[in-house]
Amino acid sequence: MTTDEQLVERNILHYEARLKHVDELFEKAHKAADTAAPEAGEELTELEKERRKLADDLEKLKQKSLEEWAKEGGPMVIWDLLAERVEKLVERLEK
Image 1: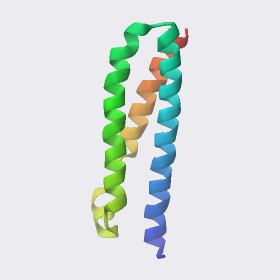
Image 2 (image 1 turned 135 degrees about the vertical axis):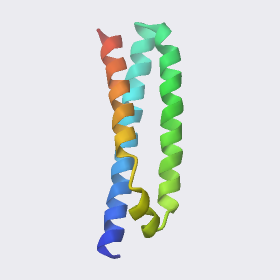
Image 3 (image 1 turned 180 degrees about the vertical axis):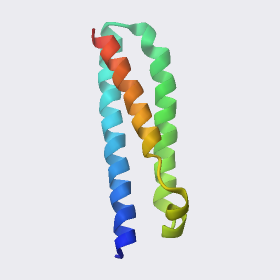
Image 4 (image 1 turned 90 degrees about the vertical axis):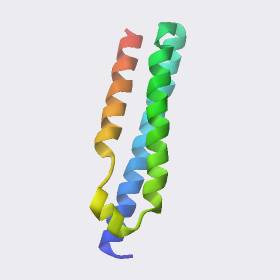
């Protein structure tokens, strides 16, 4: 495996780790919403749609060639924004 291929593999592993983190945040948000704020369900539904889109994007990234990766880069900024939004929701719900 070349260095570039290793970099792509590391990026994919990093994205998968971010997805796992987002899923853990969703678990916390659901627990908090169930007990403290059932009205947060609509926001959670919207955020879950975004999560599914990111998971689909990750699957597509796994299929791309090294050249395609070099042209397009990755979705880290979007992952971070989604995680930040879910974290803020959890903080609000757990107060």
